[in-house]
Image 1 (cartoon, rainbow, N blue to C red):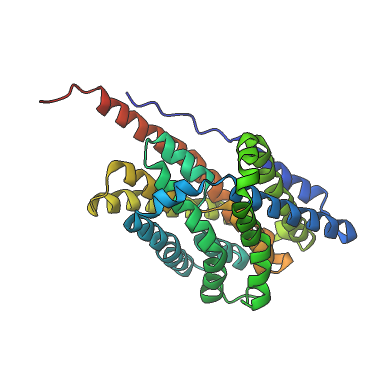
Image 2: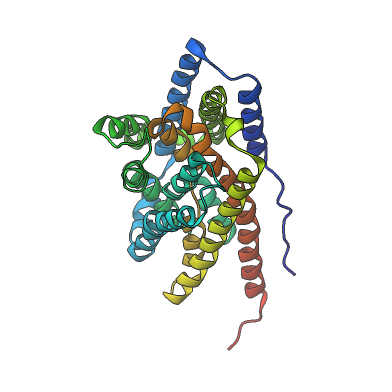
Length: 331
């Protein structure tokens, strides 16, 4: 019998909702906003430094040999997802979504895969964890360059023009701290691995800070006057349909291409996820302040849906593996 966990809202999602509520009633403005912005940038840099310090090079080297799997996930993340996002927005009547929310749906589809949840769900599903570590990490590193390039290709709005300064800002906030963490891993790696709680706190607090800044700016510029309940409901529907399409598509494609069940779990969980951790700071750099809050709404909604559905699906994979292991061996 398959055990299906109840998809409750996790504590981080509740914190995101509370942050949006705080920004609605008490938006940060003026010089204080600038100070909070600097604090958020420092927190994001520390987050990516700790990710670099904790990532074992041995797992990366072991996983990189599986090039067919990584090429497939890369294609899903940076080719199939962007095309589906563009088609979804193009097919909708303009009256159903405000322009900034439509941009947010497309921006969601241009983001790299997640790291933590992709690895966690692959492990829960008894999949190829080493390949998941390698693939999700390569996706995030590639996304530092790929996402801005795809934004420049697919989106034509104020604040998205790609420039050398934009790439330098993103590299300084995300890539350089990650590389520094890898280079210093010999000295700080063990300490970072022992203090997982600190990484979790840095991860979540940095995102909450950037979300608070983005939504404060958006509220000051009339956010909730631009988002009727029907538009928010449409975002939930579109996000859900896109996730379902990629979950089913990755499962069928991995089987059609002859991947093992352990690799199938990697393709399903890494190929269908989108990273809130990367998306939040990138939105702050790529989009005008008045637009960033609206652009992030579809990303935040997708984040919660992928966690709830991913938990159910990973548990189902695990139960099927346990049932298979329980079968008597055949001669």
